[in-house]
Image (cartoon, rainbow, N blue to C red; front, side, top):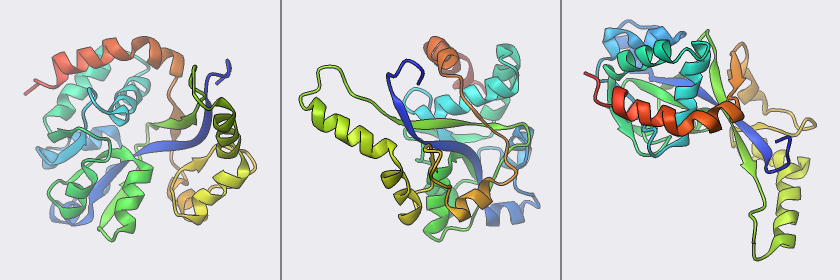
Length: 225
C-alpha cells in the first residue's frame, strides 16, 4: 500500500464455482454473468459466505457494488434477488466449496484458491467468471505495532514479499497470483484466468464504507424472501 502499512504477497480473485452434474441436470451452461446466478434453477441451491464473519463475502458485496458503478440501490436490489437462490450463508469463505463439490449445493462464489483446491481434490466442479468482471483480494503481510520480535518479523516480511517465497506458490500448487513482478503465475492457473475480467477492490472506498455496507446487507438482504 502507498503509505507502507502493509505489502501484498499475492492476489486471490473471486470466481463462480458450480457443480458439473447440477449444470447438466438443469441444462445450464457455467454462469458467465452475475445475472446468470438469478436463474430460478439455482433457487435454494447456492452457498456463499456471510458478510458478518467473512472477508470473502465482503469482497463479493463490493464486487457487486463495482459492477453497478457503486450505485448502492442497484447493487442491493441485485443482492436481494440473489438472496432468493441462496441456500445458506457460511461462516467461512470456503465453507460452501465442499457442499458444491458433493452436489448438496449447485454453486457459489468463492476465492479461486478455494475453488481450485476443491477441483484438485477430485470434485467435478466448474470455475467460471462473470463477463461484467469480479473483484480480487490482496493477501498481505504487515508488521504489527508493538510486536515482540520486530527484527524477526521484518525478515519474514522480506522473505514473504520476495521472489524466493512467491515462486514456491506454483511449486506447491497454491493457486494465488504472485504479487512480485518477477514471479510468473503458474501455467494452469494462468490458463483458468485467461479472458477473465478481474478488478481490484478500492481499499479506501471499502475501508470507509465496509461497516455501513455490511450493516445494510444484514438488515436488508439476509431477511429478504
